[in-house]
Amino acid sequence: MCFLRSLFGICAVLALMLGVLPLLSHAWPFVFFGGMRLHIVIAAVVFSLAFLALVRSPWSAMPLLAALWMATWVGWLHYGLVQPGRDADQPHVTLKLIEFNMLHSNRNGAAIADWLEAQDADIVYALESNPIWRHLDTLSETYPYCAGCARAGFGDDLLVLSKFPLQDVSTMSLGKLASNRFIRSRIDVEGRQVTLVAMHLTKPYFDDLQQEELALARRLLRTVEGPVILGGDFNSSLLSPDIQAFAKSTGLRSHAHEPRTWPVSAPSIGLPIDHILVRPPAHIDTLARMEESLGSNHFGLIAEISVPVGPLAETGGAKAADP
Image (cartoon, rainbow, N blue to C red; front, side):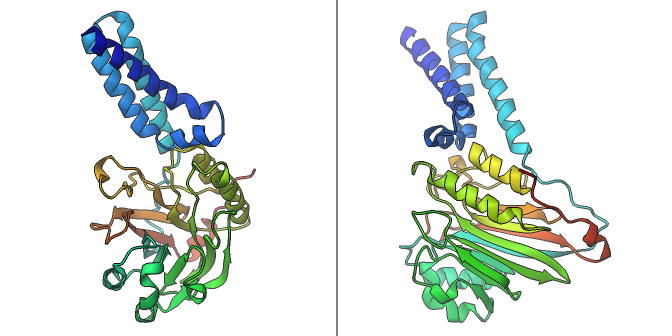
């Protein structure tokens, strides 16, 4: 029994220490643990409860109180990025968007292409799109416009498929590790200009590369006005301090309930590392996870996003926050 008390007490303290590490530094190891704050705080609460049950003294409640404070803080971080409500009286158009990291080595390209056709979305952000290269001609019947298709087979193979004509398309590399992982374009939705952004970030434990990529993406988005729909694989949750800073500085907001997308083998305890974010007045009405991963190591996301149109929409624009 003494061993169990010591074990649970040590584990509770270690979990609490891991939870506060991101406050101490922006170095990549600290940021890496920041992306797992929710899992860390759950572990801290569980170990603290076990420790309290075994020790049963006033002092043994201290780890639990600290864990509950941390849980409140993590909840505050989460809801700080949640989008505001949509104006129900404002006319709007609903867009269906799919974000899916397909996995380069996935051999189920035909099944993925069939699924994309059946979904009949308005926009698709396809990451690691190698599986569907040979099916692009068929997919063009459903999605006649494509950004990135001209270079399919090179780089990271980020594609944007669309039913809307894509304007002012720019493809660029955010960092040194992988190329062409950022595509920005615009579509016209009943006279309203909407900026589309698809991006794929490096994993947070590759030194400071993800921080450098986010810094460049932030600069690219600061010049954009009006509604933005951004989606991609961030390789980190929105609780990461770097992702938090990026979203707040660019005016991007999330749905209140983000599905866990990785790993596909344990979705109930996984991490939401694939994201769809919007800048108001765009609004995510629904956000769901694919039922099957179709051979990928990520689940894709399916969102319905409303974009205000009409005379009132002209006063509802937004800009990125000032530095």
